[in-house]
Image 1 (tube, rainbow, N blue to C red):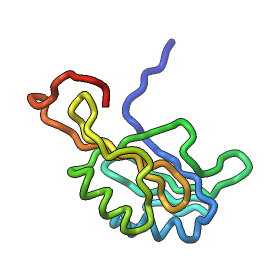
Image 2: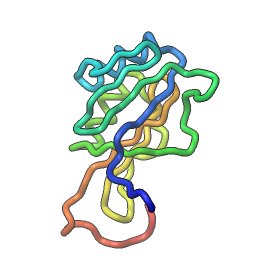
Image 3: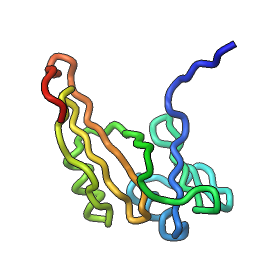
Length: 130
């Protein structure tokens, strides 16, 4: 029997400076953690859990292969807000061949945080890769 995937349920970010990361994310997300359990806290972000976890011997912070994109109303406004609070643009912002606007940021704790701006289906036009 095979199992099927539904949507993204939880995105984990591992941080070295847990005491600074938790309030930083709380301020950026405009929410308090829904779960607080010693080495981790979890925020609820539109049906997805975002877990900030203290780095340990198994996992450390940094952009190392996984890029989960969060949908936002405006990539440019989001990037302006987060970079004004210490995040750094890693890749983008740019509009890719699907018409989506994307950006990858590095949070102040070394993690990759990616955002995307959805487009209307009628505006998407195939073209060269962005």
